Image (cartoon, rainbow, N blue to C red):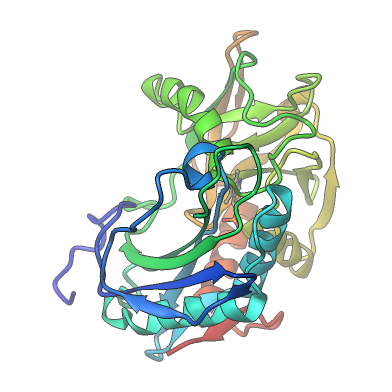
Length: 337
Ligand SMILES: *Cc1c(COP(=O)(O)O)cnc(C)c1O
C-alpha cells in the first residue's frame, strides 16, 4: 500500500487479508480462527438479527517513526465490551482472548497499517453477536466474536478544523435508564434519523440532551462532549453516555497539563460560558466545535473558527503518545509488531 493517497481514503470499509473469529458454544469459548472471508454463515433466527444482541468496539493501531505498530488501550476496549455484554445479556469475551484476537488481526494485516506521518491509521473493529437461534425473546446460547481491521484516513484531511453541532429536542439517542452506556448497535439505529437530518442541514453531529429533562448535555452522536473554561476541562456526567476511552485519556492528559477536571451535569445554558468545546472519540481524537445551534430556541453558541489552544495541546499530546513520539507514562500503548 506504498502509493496510497492516505488523505483520500477516508473512513470506510475496505477488505484486508484476514479477520479473526472465535465462537462461544456449549458453554465455552473455542480457539481463535483466521478467516479470509468477509461473510458469515448465520442462522436466520440468530438473536443478533431479531433482538439486537450485538455489541462492538472501535480502536486503532498506529505505525511509529521506529517502524513499530502500537495499539492504544485495548484493555479498556475489552472491559467496555464486557460491560456491553452484561448490559444486553451476551457472553463476555475474556480480556486476554480479546487482546489476543486484536493482536492477531493486526499482525496478519500488517501491510495495511498506514505509514508514520500519513495521519492515517489501522482501524480495528471487534464485534460480538448472538448467533444462537431463538424466536422467543431471550439471550442466545451461542455467540460469535470477530475482529476485523481496515486502513482509515486522517479524520481531518485538510487539518484540524472546527465543525458545527445542532441541538434538536425532538430526538433522543438513549433513555435515561436504557442502553446508552453500552456500545450496542441499537443505540446507533436509534440515532440514524436525527444524524441524517443534522448532516443534511450542514452539521457534523447532533448534540443530544438528557432525555428526561432536556436540560443537560449528554453526548454528541458517536462522541463524548467536553468544554473548557477557566483552565478547567469539563465533561458531562450522565447515566446514558457511552464512556469514551478517548475522553478518559484526555481527562488524564488535561490533569498532566495542569488543567482542573470536572465531570458533572452540564446545563445547556452553560454552553454560553465555555472558551472551547469539542467532541472526542477514537475516530478524530478531538473534533473541535465552532458553533452549536439550539434549533428549538433559535439560539447559537459561538466558539472560534480555529481550534482552541487547549484542544490543540490535548490533541497533540494524545496523538504523540499513540504514535510513540512521546513517552507513554501511563502505559496506554502496546507494541504488537
Ligand atoms: C464509541 C463511542 C464513543 C467514543 O468512544 P471512544 O472509546 O473514545 O472511541 C462515544 N460515544 C458513543 C455513543 C460511542 O459509541
